[in-house]
Length: 293
Image 1 (tube, rainbow, N blue to C red):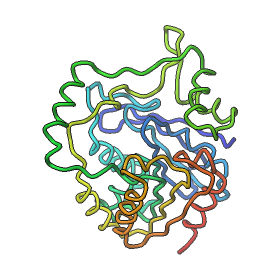
Image 2: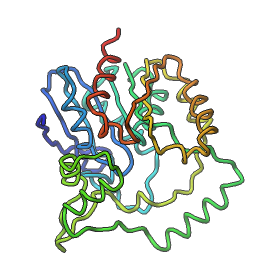
Image 3: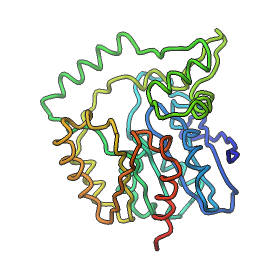
């Protein structure tokens, strides 16, 4: 495995963990992970990159080794502000190469429309957003959030790191035992009680009160000026988030249609965690895209 190093920086008042691979002077490639994931999750893909890259991958607030917010709800715009602050720190004034998976892909693609001048090339790995909502859903959404605040969510803990690895393999049967063991060591940590705890704030499981205004997000997508690579997984499980598969395909194509300079690729024999399932193929796709002038 390619060695990585950890750095802790202050991002908008939170102690934030950033993982680096490669040398400082190499071309920068930023990677942002998805929900309930960590930066180390990109290890297998980084191992397969052929070029000389300085990969910079933070743990989002409340995930991995980054500090939690000490509040009961996480707000999506904070991810945009955190990303903005980190790009200003590591690549001030540069148009960067940015890759995001799942929630990270949603953040990265939204950001690319908000700050189009800051993105040179964008890679979206299954970061297609949430189902559209209707104003009539708002009263019930807020009520559900208020109900959840009365009994905050908790994370399941585990007797051993091997048990954590087993949980990961149950969720993704494509994971080899070796990869599951590696991920378990970064996805969890042993507490003072001797149990292994997931490195994610349980507050991330809260149903927030805000509706998902897809038209506003699509306005951001339409404002992107950089070339975009969109990679889908052939065996993804994201369809249920967007409705029946046939309807979801139509909606997904509609969303992708807002990207002016887009290349789409389908990843065979991979699920939603395609950077775990097919890291070599994904690394090749990404580097081919980044090499095009």
